[in-house]
Amino acid sequence: MNMKFNLGAVIEMANPALFIKLEMLTMTSVLVVLIFSYSSIKSVHHAFSVLPFLRCEKLAEIRIRANVYDCFRKISKSNPISLCSHQLNFLAMSCQAQLKYGFYRGKCGFNDVEIIIRRIVAAGFAKDPTITPALIRMQFHDCFVHGCDASLLLDGDSSEKMAIPNLTVRGYDLIDEVKAALEKACPGVVSCADIIVAATRDAIALAGGWPYAVQMGRRDGRVSLASNVDLPSPFFSVAQSIAAFQKKNLTTTDMVILLGGHTVGIAHCANFVNRLYNFNGTNDADKTMDPNLVTKLRTICPQNVIVNNFTSLDQNKYSSNIIDNSFYKQIIAKKGILQIDQSLALDSATKNMVTYLANGFNFPFLFNNAMVKMGAIEVLTGTQGDIRKSCRAINLP
Image 1: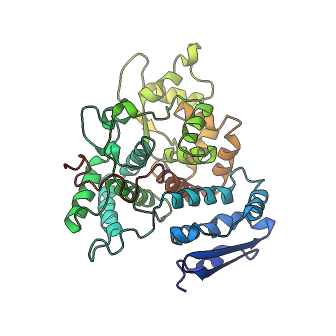
Image 2 (image 1 turned 180 degrees about the vertical axis):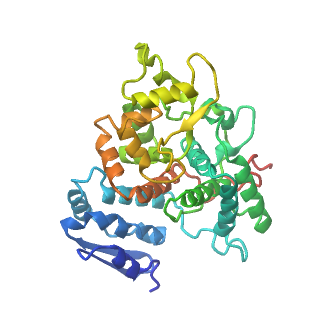
Image 3 (image 1 turned 90 degrees about the vertical axis):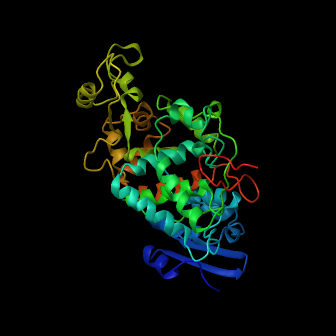
């Protein structure tokens, strides 16, 4: 049988204590046997990283029963982030969503849909590297409202674009450019929802993240209302944020990892000035913020003056445009900009995860998986929704 991944590469990545055997039993059945020692936990995530490249319908029939899952749970119990269960969780969500790898293969003539997207994103990134945080934010804002259906892209006086949290979303022109190229290559084939997810994936890789595969097959929604926008606030407590993410079937671990996307991007004064002067009525700055950072930010955001100034969410000037774990190191050092960011390093529900991510090397891998999982929220597939001709408007009857 033709394997969907390079087994030799898997064995090379894993340490000698980890032995992986995958056998194709039938065209729609896969038996996965993982035998590993306690010391091999660090390479478990490498082994699991190949599983998404199997077809989703095969993954849906993987014979992993409760006793095997319990083994994964126990072997990773000392790890603040259970890599095994996190990966299985995102695999399950992806399969349930009926998305597929290579969905557009053979559907666009001799054109490769993902290459077309990648080339345009690369050109956009070369002109403006801040397109990466812009697209990450776009995917987040789209998927958290009615799922990943590109409803955020629809124009209108009362559309999602007009909601206050979305007024600063950027990247629409790049999505339009990609859509125009794909409509020219194969009209009515590629959804705007898939374009957002694929373009974001490519932008992450261009900003130093690890390349990863995404499943396709999303359809575009027909409804976009500003009144439906209910996004987690930067002023939320950790408990409030956890609750907001749980509504989308995202775990606390997912939340901490996805907020790590703040390793790139900026925040405007309006989102953190409350921490600089009269925090919670104390007539002083937030004591959880480094005093030197307070002084710096006060020069950017004067008291009682409305300005549109901003600062990097990752205060490491050498890393603020790179997808890495620097963000977690900064918030441990009390250099978080947003209230929710700083709270991650202090709250008992999340601080161990933050420490793990700050000291580890696998954040890019975990971030990719969390983005894939987020990209499967409440998707439309099959005959649901539409394939829009323009990402800015629903199709006319």
